[in-house]
Image (cartoon, rainbow, N blue to C red; front, top):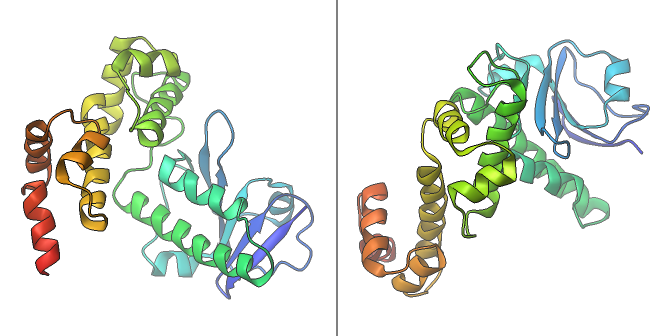
Length: 249
């Protein structure tokens, strides 16, 4: 069943498939469609969508006036299909599965739609969206497997992940995964895992009263010294000093 939320006069959120009904569409619009559930979650840009394509589209779709998209920092991408990062995938699912009702659900979806648009624009601006079909050394299928490895890290970073377990889970051998991951994400698997764990540790330091040692342990560091060294290299300050500065501010 087709649902919609009029976010503003310049943007409408479409959910599901079917006739558009009374869904208001802005003038001179483009469409950003998000597929969060396929084997290769993707974002598709349609720069000249028609009513038939919008009616048939079963993905979550943001229909936005082209001028408004450009005004808020959007750029017309050279590629039209991209892999859907885990962070955007989570927003898409939150919009679609909002466990609310009535006006509260509408307001929630409105706010999350704006967040989804802004986060997408930010990733476009920083070249962090990966085209669905590239011209690199990896085949399209292997590219999808490397992206799946990144999704495993982004969503399961708090588990005991190793190169072997990730390689088995995404269906690539160690060497191809290692090379492909660095080529696509400009870091190693170990660096990507560390980034997720240290970022979570930083959030916990700023938002909880847990001891520094407990925070390090919860994020995969078996002793406080190794946690402090890794944290200092990443953020330029020790965990204790970060917390002290935040408390004094």
